[in-house]
Amino acid sequence: MAMQTFAPSVTPDQGMQVEVEPPIIEIGFGDQYMQRAGDGVQQYYDKMAPRWTNARKVEADYIIDFLRAHKGRIPFYWVPSGESALRSIRCASFTYRWKKGNFCDIEARFEETAPQA
Image 1 (tube, helix red, strand yellow):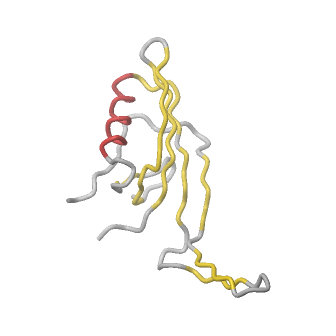
Image 2 (cartoon, one colour):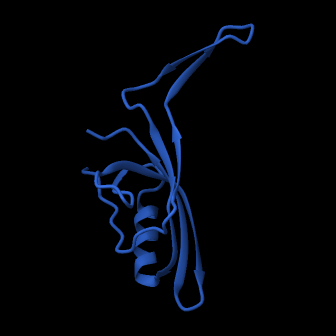
Image 3 (cartoon, helix red, strand yellow):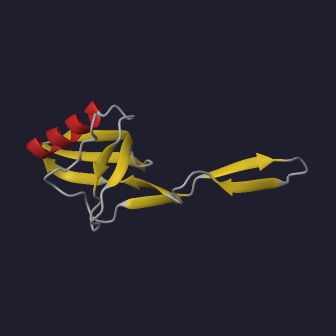
C-alpha cells in the first residue's frame, strides 16, 4: 500500500518543538567503557511535537481521523511548516481537547522514520 500524505488545511502553531536524536548503538565492555557507533544510513531522526490550537471542527476531525487511521505504527508523509521536502513520519501519540464553540486543541508526537520503499 502506498503511503498517504498528511495535509491538514490548517498549519500547526508556530514554535514547534523538535528533538534531534541520532541513531546510535551502544555497547558496554565493563569498567564503564562504552563504544558507540551510528546505526543505519540516516544520520538523524527528528521527533516533533506539532500543536494545533483552536482548530475548527472540520479541521480537527480530519487531523484526528487521519492520525487514528494510522494507529501509531503506519508511516505517512508530512511536510513540516517552513520546509519543502516530504518526510516519512509516524504519529507515536496524540491528545485532543474539545472546547466551547466546536474548537479543538490537538497535540501530537511525530517521529521521523526511515523512508519507505
